[in-house]
Length: 115
Image (cartoon, rainbow, N blue to C red; front, side, top):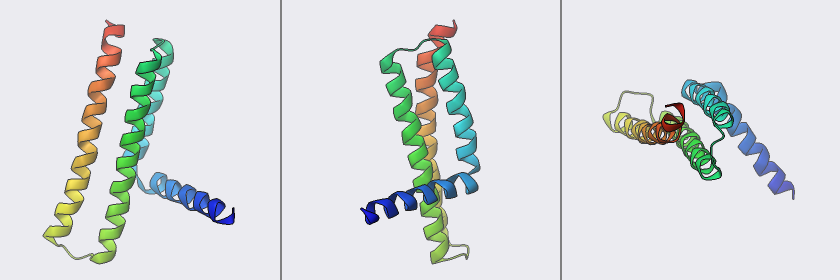
């Protein structure tokens, strides 16, 4: 039981690090709040809620993994190295791909309701 409690504590510490250091996370949380408010306003369906929640979780997870990778790579070397830069850029690109897919899903859900 103590191991489980410690694991939860570690996870919460990780989440707090993400929110302290992640400018993008704060922007994304703001967008999530807007989408949730719009979801209630437009009475989106259960399926639409599940799609949004899935995307929100995926992007937050990807951003978290990107931050973890950056921390790890910074431990390896603070010097300018092309291989480390490439790894960081690829991870950031993966987050961007998810964000673009999320934006498309949001538009597909909300544009018909707005117009």
